[in-house]
Each structure stands twice: as C-alpha cells, then as structure tokens.
Image (cartoon, rainbow, N blue to C red; front, side):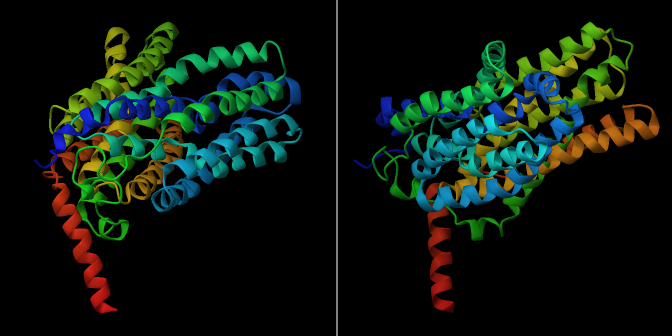
Length: 424
C-alpha cells in the first residue's frame, strides 16, 4: 500500500522531534537572540568602560542589520544548494568565533567590524536553515513543529539577559561576549550537530517529490503572484509591528498612562510574542493557514487602532497583547506558507528573500515613525498608518487561495525544467 502523506509524523518519530528540539536550541543561541536582543544589556557597561556614547554603540546594531539584509539571502541560496547541515554548522562556528573576537574590539571601528562579521559569518545560523529542516520532517503537524522550534527565540529572550548579566558581574563586557561565544560552541554546536538534519527523501512516509528537492524552483516562484503577495504582506507587517514595538513605551506614556503601565505594556508585548508561537503552530495544523494569519493580523490591526486612539491603562495592555501576538506569529506563518505554497526545493532561498525585506522594513519603519512623531507631535497618524498596513496584510492573506498539492508543485517544476531544456 502506498505511503500516505499524513503518516509523516509517525514515521519520522523521535528523529523528527529531535530536529525540532535541536532547531529550538540553535535559534535560541543564534544571531537574533545573542546580537540583536542582547545589546541592551551591554549598553551601560560598554559606555562606562569605553566612553562611547549610546548612539555610537547602538549604531552597531544598524550595521549588523544592514549587512544581514544582504547576507541572509546568500545564506538561503547556499542552504538550498549544499544542504542545511554544512551551512548551519560552519556558520555556528564562525558566529561563535566572531562573538569571541569582540574581546579584542578596543576601538569603535573594530567594534563595528565585529558586528558586520557577525552578520556575514552568522547568517547561516539564523532560523531559515532550521525551518527548512523542520518543515522537511513534518506535514500533518508541521505548524506545531515550526512553532515549537521558533519558541527557542522567546525562551532565549527571557533567559539570556540573566545569563549575560551574570557574566557581566564577573567579567568586563568583552569577557561576557567571549563567554557567549563559548556557550554557542559548547552548547549550540554539539546539539545542532547531533540532532538537526534534513529528512532523507522517501524515508518519512511521503512521496519523494514532497520533501527534499521537491517543490518549485526559486526562478519559478519569483514569477508567482502568490510569492509576491506573501513577500508584501510580511514586509508591511514588519514595518507596522516592529515600528510599534520600538516606540511602544513612549506611545503608551503619551496617552496619560503612568510609566508603570507603559513598561508593563512592553512586558505584555513580549509575553504575547513568546506565547503566540506554539499557539499559532497548533492552529496552523487545524485550520487554513492564510485564514489563521488573517485573524491574527486583524487582532493586531485592532490593537494598533486602539493605540492610535490613545488607549489608556488596561486598554493599552490589551492593545500590547494583540500587537505582540502578531510579532510572535510572523516567523511561524512565513515558514509555513513558503513550505506549503512552494515546497522545500528553494525554501531557504525564498524565505531568505522575504526575511531580507522584513529586516529592511524593521530598520526603516521605527525611524519613519520617529520623524512623523516629531513633525506632528503625536503618534496618532503613524499608528493609523500602521493599522492601514495591517489591513493590507489581512487582504493579502485572504487572497492567497488554496495550497497546491505536492504532485502539482513537482509537475510545475518538471515542466519548467523541460521548457528550459527545449529552448536551449
């Protein structure tokens, strides 16, 4: 009797869930958590030790993000060409060594150079490779698997500040960065090497063209209306949600809420971000993914409108929860949609392109809101604009249409290859 697609989880078994666990650890100790989210812990110690100003120090994150926008796309191409394990494992080692090199960063230029190196050499250690591996092992419970793997970021954001602060209390900031590098080498590298691997073609109960090299090529996908709808939705979502996250405390404080409520709003945002990952994954396995996305993005639209209208006290906290839920769900939704609409063949490449656009929007959006706030003296207009962007995201999700089946994706890829051969 032929293998059925819904048996992929049972036949993947312990190995499949091991990939999920290893991916969660890899994401938790990846560039996003250890570079982007940890810099806030380092700001005061670096400023005190070096005399550099806070704007000078935070410029390193801008450099990191700008370089990552270019390097993440290249990493995606390499992952699709050479496989997850070689690219991810090499990138983990180089990322750890780059963190350790911050121990020698005694000038601003050296500091900036190290952050640029972290973006280039650590690009393959971001989530795109792990998501490709996880999606290859799961079909029926793919959403839950992706959500659990992605929750590694939330766990890291909660725990790594405590670990980093402990190291800072014993060493200087350079020693703490060196310690982070050691953690990556001693924890992330062996666990990822042991657990994370791509599903062998035909070995997990699905047709061979449904996993591994199956799916649509990047060239074909880039000519697809659906791909650019997904791209636009997540770039616009990034501009709206990440911009709000940066300004959230100031925004709530402007509405006559006390500082304690504003800070609590930021905590609510983070909690919703962490909890929404596995919850979103659970929902993706039971309902049509674009509909799930539309509901979640509609919730954040309501939250943004509440903030635009000056929500105070408890209403501001509710708004923070709604917006934070979208911030947490976006990565799960993106990986799931790319895998279901375009397959595994060029998953990392296509995901990398969207992620690059996502980062660019996350870089530009907060600055644009700050400029508009300074110009008008209020966050009302920027928040209304963010809500409008979210509405567009909802409409784009509702317009995606049904998933193609694996056989039709395989047929499209094969037909395209034949057409190119005939033209040649």
